[in-house]
Length: 245
Image 1 (cartoon, rainbow, N blue to C red):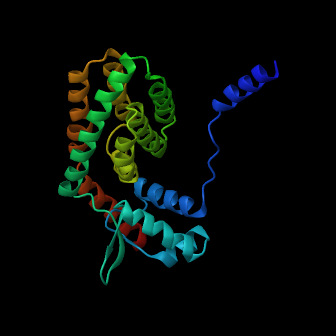
Image 2 (image 1 turned 135 degrees about the vertical axis):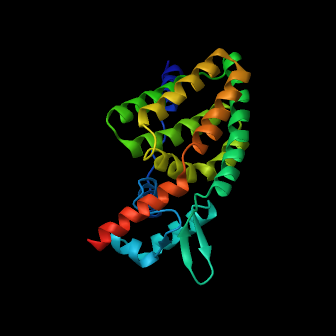
Image 3 (image 1 turned 30 degrees about the vertical axis):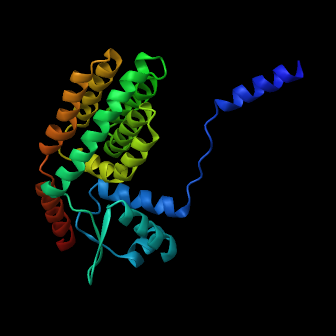
């Protein structure tokens, strides 16, 4: 009986997700990504270590480490004599990100569909995230939608069961959160969320061709429809006007 009780206890504990404590560096990273996704920092802006540390009320050490991490993920770029600058959102740079992302997520979909058919996975986790996205859209929480959008696509990759694929996709995640966040400044958030309903339906139906076409539209065509360079230019003009007042 004691052995059975122990097994039940272990089984119950296995359902618990491990707690994650964010380090100060992680918090600084999140703050920079959020500010950029909201259009408070702008792509191409210089990021001054001392100014970020002062604004966040932390020492320069975690800021320096955060910037190194963001540099490794191409969110910031170190330029000789010019310091650290936020990633650009010019069409050529975006196209490179989008093509890699499309290839990874189409592969993820193919493998996820296979696992769903075998009963090794289901769309439940995606549906849960999507429900939260709809709630964030109803609350007009644009950055909440952007964060959950990233979480949705991370979950999609995880459903593939392919850890190499997930590790290949993950370095793109913070760039994607910024792109998603900026998109919400030009596109209705409810429309952005609705795009994901069809993706889940295609996965559930096991229709790989339909899924691939949906992802081409979702990742390439809808992203290309937003003129990010013009958006940044308009946001920069608004910022300059506020400073002039």
